[in-house]
Amino acid sequence: MTLRTSLAIVAAVVVKSAPLAAQSLSSRVVASDGIVQVIYPSRPSVCGDGQSFIGNLFGSNQFTSGDATRWGRDGWSARQCLRGPARVVATVVSGEVTRVRAYVGPVPASVSDVRTISVPAAEASAWLGDVIARGSARASSDMLLPFILSDGPEPWALLLKVARDENRPRDLKRNVMMWLSNGVSEHLGLSDADEPSNDDEEMRKQAIYVLTQRPKNESVPQLIELAKTLKHPASRRTAIYWLGQTGDPRAVEAYAELLGLR
Image 1 (tube, rainbow, N blue to C red):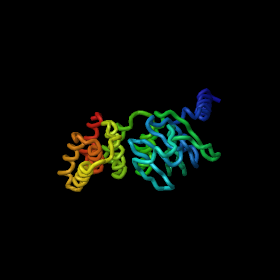
Image 2 (cartoon, one colour):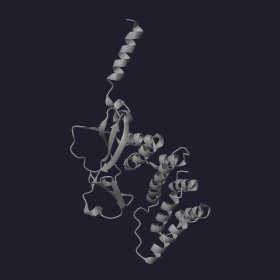
Image 3 (spheres, rainbow, N blue to C red):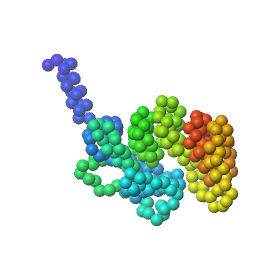
Image 4 (cartoon, one colour):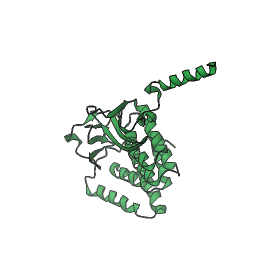
């Protein structure tokens, strides 16, 4: 046996026996078909029951029942809501992730046929962000909530990059803009703005919605101005949200400016 052959065999053995920690998280997730859960630290502000409820994410709560998901700004004080961790439960078929669910809170007792991978938040964010930036429309959209939940690096720079990418699907970018609107509102201290408590506030929000029905050359500049300058927090948050739903590139740049990420 030559020296070159011996070295090749040794290298192959080392690679084969490399610890799981040395493999990419993406490779570990799709290493075998079945169900795998990835557990990682969640944003300090969010909580959940680990099963069907995620609370206090940008001032809203998510309720899940079967395949139905509902968001609202009520009900979290009446439920068990414990801090972290975040958990992605993924179904892997033929080496691809085909279904994803996100949870926050207590991790249920392990089931024998479910693989569990625990990673730091930064590693989870890197994996989720890569899927969002490069994956299929469905996979990318499914990963948005788990990505936002991570206590890793702030997600907004990557989401702005996706929103600016002309090659990414339109539906994905609409979802990205929805999350960016939440990020802008949080950055501006508007996430906890009170819901309308008087007729004037309700009328302002209704006027903003009516504005969104106008042609974009009229509505987008006005929505940008309202998002930047409106003095009423709840109405300003409404303007920020509807600006993102216009699908106009000017909305992306306005969000970047408001986030201080131009």
